[in-house]
Length: 407
Image (cartoon, rainbow, N blue to C red; front, side):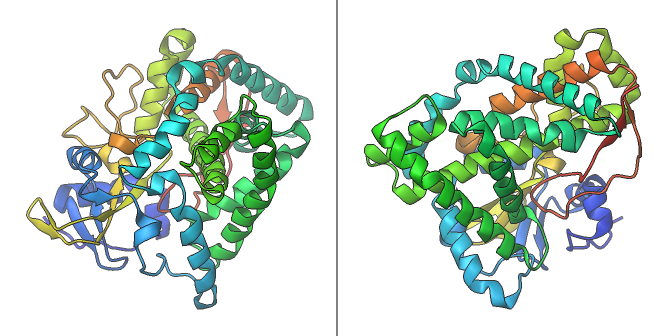
């Protein structure tokens, strides 16, 4: 039976549980025209992979080439702020298509190789232990969001950027403001632009210094791209923001969504405890699949394309949903069941194709070490509440807090 699909993706029930909603679209209308936001909703795994690999037909230059208003709607008085956001986001290298994207990605790719990211594992392990020690020492209840998931990726990213320890709270504050980009509040542009301008002001003098005295950090890598003529100064600055936002929110969500999934699937938690080191890789992959940190990504059609009998027109907005693709029964057996022995696990939590997430390896390292540390250190870990509140976002799958009992 075909039922009416509600196109409002910000209703409380859809924010709370997108899987039922997206499952209906995937079953009934997998290439769905959302009238409310004027965009195509893509929900099947094979379709998402096909779209990602046909990057010539589906442009990533969303902010650069889409003149339409923001969605959900913003305050009319903030239109100029949205223009600022479009210019800012549009200069990030992920907003470029080939061949420009390839040249820009080459500059930073060497920094993010799996081998080089693996070298961060000792720092990650040490940071997790220190953060959990501090949370225990403070007493008064532990919130894994506040005490572990939020500070851990900021610490790692700050190290990558070469930010002094005393200035990391400032970086965290800017990161919080940048997160407004995926939210639905009408006044989100004000907070977002404050974060963007704050990043420009903070990083600009660091780039000046790195051009003269390069160091072993990400800002020096971007500065080398400016020296070679691949990046402009503005592109260097906004790509630092990209590292901060992309490496921050996704890892927070992986840690919190994954831990929550384990708490709600105690058999899998018990299984992980039997061999934390042996199972942490597959456990992290399943956490990424089961409740993905990023719900969706946007593209623009570069030409007219037919898909499942639907005519996608040039310049149409498209949003593909990893949350749905990773629960597609045509790709995964028992997709709504968490199974940390699942292998292979061809999830698309980090996207697919030429824009596959550069930071996937470091996110995996952080997830693996968090889940193994929690299972070893707190075998009786419990949620203090099962009533989770989620951020109103079409892009991210983010809970607001995760209070736990350690014993």
